[in-house]
Length: 273
Figure 1 (cartoon, rainbow, N blue to C red):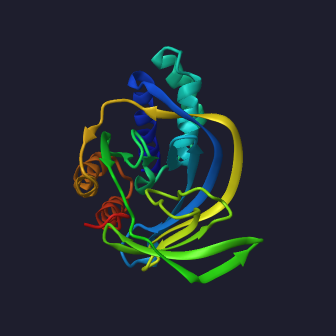
Figure 2: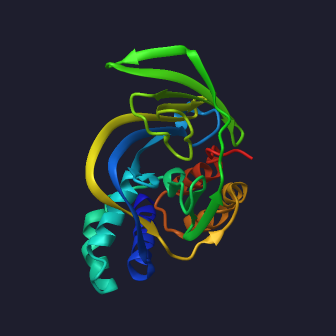
Figure 3: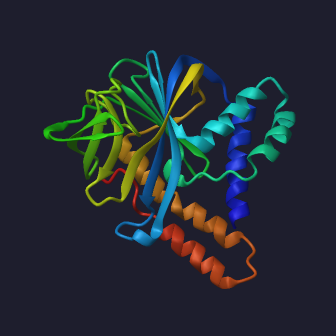
């Protein structure tokens, strides 16, 4: 089954090669690498998974997405002028081992298409969705909670968003009002963010300077929805995925039972409505 999931990921990538147009919207000079650790299942520590996520900060906008997607996208751009089948044949060997968890299968563009607005692009079982929203986090900064790590100052802040209470640590020493996922609005970069149940944790691992790296927006056709609607779509997408599992061939029937149970238990989406 792992092979089938990988092939599904590859087919999505090939769809991009065939049909997608890429719009250059900015250039980035800083890249922040986060480890994203999360529970697939609510209140189940044994279901913990992780992804490497990238925050690219440009002159006007920022872009947050997985390292796997960043690599696949870079190959798409590299072979963009090739015939679709030729490009697919070149990309296949290079991404055949890539995996991307469903909880990480998205882009977040901040201050795009206009200042103060964000665009979230996500997918669910081969369909693509767009959420455009204006977010204003009601941060409470605790100036009494400060610490110094490796010579940098960190300050604590808290907020509530999409059904969860969050604790953030930001540093004014990196004067960029940004952070992982959709979070921003503090007077410094968010270096660690976690919900009160510690089921979703983002932690900065590395800072890289990049030399005017182009920032591209995947300007294909997406179905517009709300943040609440997208979360409900993720839940609804379990049904066709289970149907796909049931149509596959298994040497051990218990493998099918376990695979279906795992899909059914994936209920711990970062946004709760």
